[in-house]
Image (cartoon, rainbow, N blue to C red):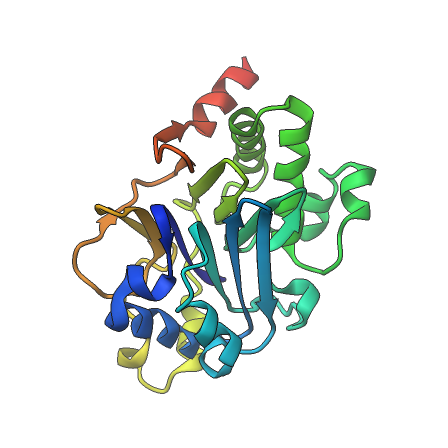
Amino acid sequence: MCRLFGYVTESRCSVAELLGEEGLASFTSLTAVHSDGWGMAWQTPEGTCTTSSPRSADIDETYRMLVKEPLSPAGLVHLRWATGGLDVRPENTHPFLADDAAFAHNGHVSPIADLEALLTPGSRARLRGDTDSERYFHFVHQSVEKYGDEAEGVTRALATLIKKFPRCSLNALMLTPTHMFAIHINSRADSPLRALRELFDDEGDIPPRHTTEYFAMDYRETDRGLEVVSSGLGQPGWTPVPADTAVMVDLATREVTRLDPVARLDVDAT
């Protein structure tokens, strides 16, 4: 379970510029729950760059430095909460990277063995950690390779996962050299309410919307471009992302294309 922030802008921006001082402080404060590592990905002319650490973002000087750097016109940030007994170690820290595609997930897909069974031998050989999220990414990646088209590959992979894991959250951001994918598919996923309550003596201290809309995502469009964020920021000016949707954002034009994996699932079934 994790928090996500992604952006596609007209020119190079820092995370701090986009969220503002108050917004960045609110996002970083989510380490009260999501303290099991952090990671970032950003797009450059040379390719997709990533960095990550199993340390909590609120005590990591590298995080504090990078969120203030105007690294790119497109990027993402991930704060990790290692649920399900998965280890806190570098190999399990998001984002995952393969062939210039970076991926960060908010959710838990189980059973992990069933998810791994969807992978080809080549995809399994790329695995480095224990997480369902890494396996989710490589399933999407192998689907893109299979169909030779990012939109088609992502759509077909999501359709398969919705069918096989209907009660799991597939919320994710994926950054490629040409597109940002924002996935908000979780309508039948259970909120980790019990685990949240175990972290706090007073339920009033739990971050905003975590007990009621843990898997919610919001977006906003500004003069700079498009931003998307997981619930918990607690600022005005954001619009809820519709349930069970996925979009593809063109990095060059910022054009948004809606993907419809549920419709693809119906087509494949017939």
